[in-house]
Amino acid sequence: MFDPAEFEAGTRGHVLAICEGGRSRTREHFADRFGNADTSIYSLHGRHIQDVVLGLRVKSSLSDPMTVLLTVAQNRFLLNALRGEGFLNMRLTDDEAAEVVGIDPVRHVFEDCIASRPCVMGRDDHGDFQCATHSTLFLPAMVRGSALWKRVREGLALFGVAERDLSAVTAFRLDMVQRPRFTTRLHPATPTSPATYGFLLGDAANAIHFWPGRGLNSGLGSAISLARSLNGAWTGRPFRDADFIRHEAAMSMLQYRHKSRAWNAMITTDEDGVSCAIKDKIAQSIEAGTGRGDQERSADTDAFMERLRGIRDRLAPRVPGMPDDAALLAHLRTIRSDTLRTLLDSGAWDTLIVGGEEVDIDIFYRETPSATPDPARTAAAS
Image 1 (cartoon, rainbow, N blue to C red):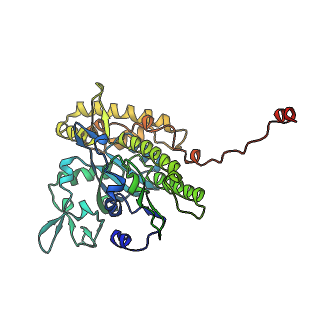
Image 2 (image 1 turned 120 degrees about the horizontal axis):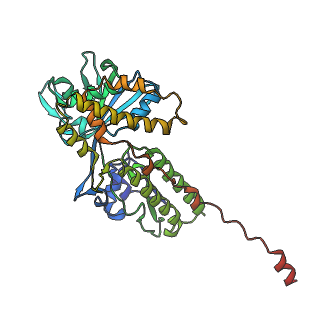
Image 3 (image 1 turned 60 degrees about the horizontal axis):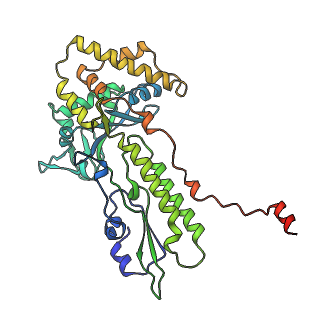
């Protein structure tokens, strides 16, 4: 493991690539070089927006086209799976996130390993979800009256997952910050050593909300950009600031494109143009959705079916095998009325606003074509 203190005291090289994740200790050690991150850009009404997501390792009995359609139609659950196997991610309200704790069955104390590390709790021989590292148990699954666990079960039902096919639970916190720079000179040159340049790559540079994806794309893009800059600038002599102009520009583009996309997966805007966090919209729906009658359920079903049809028509040319209306209606009848209302209120994925042009790293590294003599000028000069 990299030790910044040893690096300060030992022999330093030309380059230090900092890429040990979103909570990089190395980046924080060099915070005075990279500058302080800004949370205000990803805040609403002065509050930095953070999502807590419960990750459930599952096996779904539904077809992939069905799970794609159900995922795109709402913002409460996201199933990342292939042929049914993968993780069902559940966006939590603040009250639900407070329930995400483990309990030590020996010492009878609460532990936050699942909420802070995070740890993965796998199902043990007794059917409990246990952390292999800390031997803690996932408390909500053990409490009969847990509101969170009841809603987890509803999510499993939505995606056709039998409770026995839920094999592990984890949780993670997602937020974003705006980084002022990604490239900096960590140490100046000395008579005996070159200048050392530091580079933030991957999540250490641009940790993004995973809901719309692109985290891997962003990480690979940052590594490719740095490799091309180093390859193009290296002449056997020490590097200088000007060698990394293109890389810094590429990193700023990656930050703008992927974080703007991710921000739109965290917030929603009403018809009056007022924005709020999607998790808050879900919380409001839960509070207002209890005790819904048959008439309200019928209206909610009609509205959700209309949304599903629109998404199905749009995706059908790219995703063959989409379910018909009869299959969708039969499936929705298995969902509780309050859950259906929450799915409706959470809104569909806004695929239009997160789509569009992608970052093209190549534009910074295309070779300039060599000048070709103009035949007319050559003839005139002779």
